[in-house]
View 1 (tube, each protein chain N blue to C red):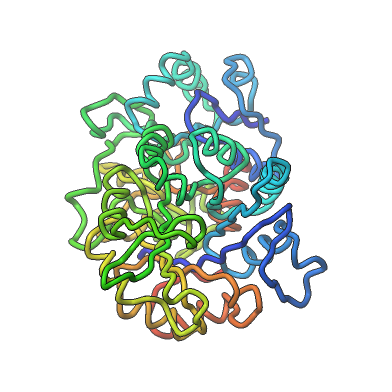
View 2 (cartoon, one colour; view 1 turned 60 degrees about the vertical axis):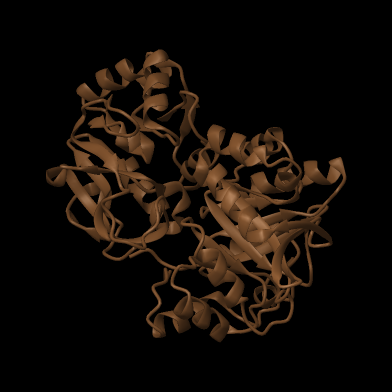
Length: 253
Length: 203
């Protein structure tokens, strides 16, 4: 049986993992290679690296680090941040990424999804959507959640799937950082309109939130989080044990 | 030395790194002479069957591969590379495979119970059918490996080493004499996957 995936997300800036990492037992907790290895050895099913640098030197550094990560960690790697063109796809894929996540770049140019899916296959293209409720409907936000595009999120996600996106990362801005659980209502609404894997993001505060997510929405395939893993509030090993206790199929290592 | 056949399909970075990780000497190559001198051959591949099969034929490497396999050299196909080992594929039309393992590749869509998505993507547990096969030497029942595919091989039970349950029994690993294949990505399947590559290097 296919297992539910647990995915830690690492924001990388100028070659370092940023956003409070607080681990004991690692010599350099902000080193993406070391942290990636730690997660991989402790049960993460996949890793997401977001490049949050704006400069070209930062980008070069990110690509070098990606190569290092990809030559030491043998689980799927998804890369996002600053993906605007097919050349960006090429750059990260050649450095060891397995999937590429598009967000603002696809909003600016939706054909990017179609062209990338055609060239690299659907499985390679992840549509990441930052979504927030505005006046009773879901809006897509761009630029890291700072700019309301006015686009209807359900339509956008449906369109992305039709154009060839192989997976959806649904990040609810409404629950992000609140740590009171995933946005089940939003996830349910999205899961009813697409038939590709959905990765839930935004709101995980404890292990029970993942149990609730997978129990109440069997169509959700994966849970993504950052700070609760980085701060050691939830250990992936413990989380998997807890999920298994609740009859949710996970991969144990 | 292991030759990873480069015929312009797919991303070979992780495959090469994972072989380096287990201490195997591997080269990514489209050079017929290098493939001929290699001890083992890996046929990778992602994307569409028809397109990949055509590229393999255009480079002439399909002939080299068939010659080497006929001489008893160990060959392993991965993902689409495994699918190409079979007689034929029904992925968007009908395409002839390499005919190294009897069986055919068919769409998963329409065969799965309602609610299961295509592609079959993610970590799934192996049900081992042939624990005695050297490729399964380090692998045990229930070990999880990473799959990404929309088509699968059927009518190949006699040569199936392992399956994975996804509403149907998905062919996960196959072997016929010196020719082997994995539908999943061993290079993306953590320690379990590295051990399968290691076992291949020792067959």
